[in-house]
Image 1 (cartoon, rainbow, N blue to C red):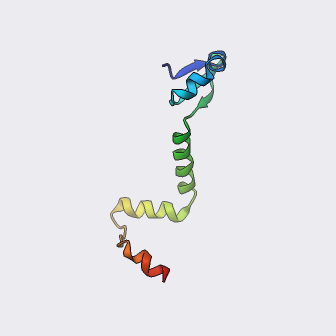
Image 2: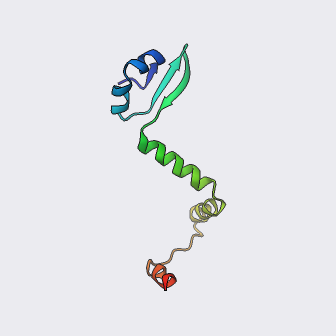
Image 3: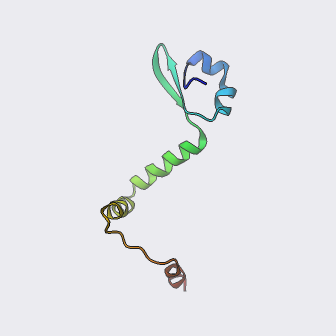
Length: 82
């Protein structure tokens, strides 16, 4: 299935496009106007945006990538609960 469709084609085949579970670019007058994004992909995008908006999470990712991350055993979580 094409991943680019016209607006009128998208309107006529919306159900089929949704069931295809693929990102679709919808063009109007020859220009991209909108995107139809599968739910799981959109959830992943939103989760990434939330992480990037959290300075502590970004710092943790940078530490990990630089090899300076600190890893602890899961048992540490049990100690904190008590």
